[in-house]
Length: 102
Picture (spheres, rainbow, N blue to C red):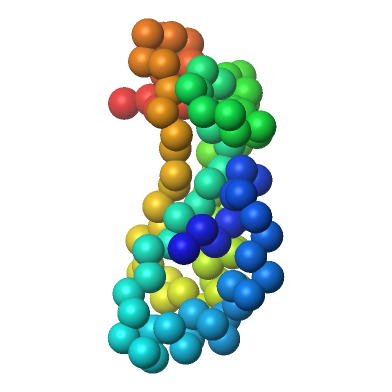
């Protein structure tokens, strides 16, 4: 389920804590996906991109927001939250390093 991020495709007003509780009670296991800023050299058409000079701060802000959104939906604190990073050009060293340092 796409639960947050400034690149999420739609608002999903039906995605509520009650809905999450109902689905989990029915035996479903949810896969929470967060679609935040994408690499500046992304090959996708996402509008919100990482500023290579602010990547660390943007990453922390996205992580904090993901936790806030997950908590509001009632996801357990130990839930794995998946950051949906779209494909990006790996031949762009500046972008690759800012986006995804090793």
